[in-house]
Image 1 (tube, helix red, strand yellow):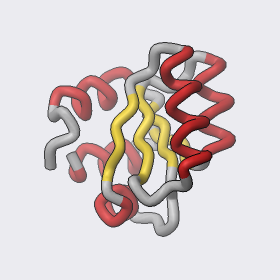
Image 2: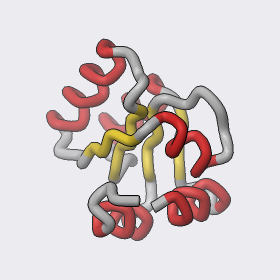
Image 3: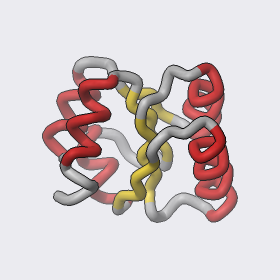
Length: 96
């Protein structure tokens, strides 16, 4: 999964940040949401509710793994905007 996330990041098929991802979910642009396990409860609830309402899959990942995979620090919410990458990540079932 980490290799696929890194590839998606380099291909510019990820969007980062709670507000941007939340707005993009409502616009139908996000195909998969990844949330850090260390995100605040409010952030997790906001993203989970928005994802559920718009029927977007959500995977919770360890903070270190998520940030290392995308090469950034302190990122709590990531949106995958490409169907191919989303399917690839979902087929792995969140397993690393």
